[in-house]
Image (cartoon, rainbow, N blue to C red; front, side, top):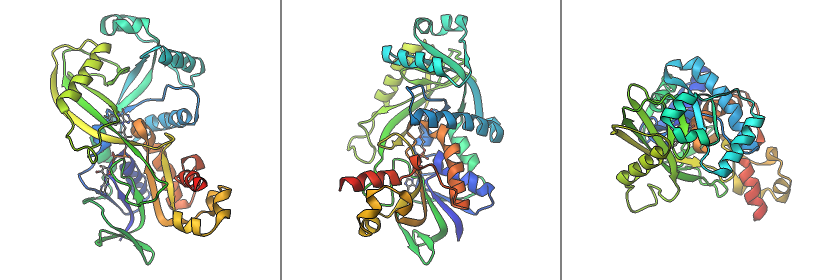
Length: 370
Ligand SMILES: Cc1cc2nc3c(=O)[nH]c(=O)nc-3n(C[C@H](O)[C@H](O)[C@H](O)COP(=O)(O)OP(=O)(O)OC[C@H]3O[C@@H](n4cnc5c(N)ncnc54)[C@H](O)[C@@H]3O)c2cc1C
């Protein structure tokens, strides 16, 4: 029997496995297709803050950005490439946001090299932009490195049964605690208040003679070049879903779109496509991630109105020894180390996670509407 079974080998599941194995717990990571085979394997894995107007999400991502840069640098320096991040406004609305961000920034901003901009991205000179120190991680290698101390079980989890104080997984394995980190692919525990949306993304690694020292975000994300190779990626396809669409995704069309959008920013020469990566990223309906225990909706409702009228989450009934970590949107690699640490503390010491992240908030909203 394992102390913890983590279902899903993306950056969320792997970060939780890392924290728990470091705390000397026995951990099994289940993934139906392999480590980083979902959204995480497709990610450009830029570690960047969120440039937006003030708000809870911006603050959360800011804290996670500062924490995660430090975390990756300390624990996996060989898998983190530090590079200046150049965010160029797409339009006037974006420019306004960047101007506001500059006025209130808690991070040290840099001045992008005029000479470099002139030769590499001449139009950026006339566009509002922000430059600051950030990083990119090697997505696949990072997830693999984080799960070194855990057992990896390549299996689709289809059955989860709680019996006699433990979770039985696929009638074969058992664990004291289960962490659901299944991204946009499955929820496994069917509760009417848990809804996630999957957004399809595509990344290409290309060989090019263009030397780019920046991580650039504008119409798409472009990584700095490393030995003549750079990555271009975006999660912009809200219409395609591999489990819901009857047609398969058109890789050629996706590539052409990425290259066209990248070339609006950067002049790319001598392009050779090396590899395509595709995957779904999952987001919640209020854009804030879901971290913590899951409410047993029927049982809580059966206890009567009192429990749901005043949303005191402590009054709800929860699945025993079961947690979720999901809904990180386009910031999974920024958020995962920060959220995994919170989840570890909740699982091991009962330290409460900030209620703003609790999946229970969706139960409260759903139950109120009933
Ligand atoms: C093209 C693209 C670019 C992106 N760029 C960035 C970026 O630059 N920076 C950033 O921070 N984020 C980026 N993201 C977002 C980031 O990738 C996601 O937020 C992150 O991958 C979410 O991780 P996850 O672990 O929740 O989900 P996933 O990585 O999707 O992992 C879930 C895993 O669960 C497994 N699974 C599901 N159900 C079962 C089951 N029943 N049994 C067994 N296994 C199961 C799946 O196989 C999958 O591997 C990008 C995403 C995409 C697609």
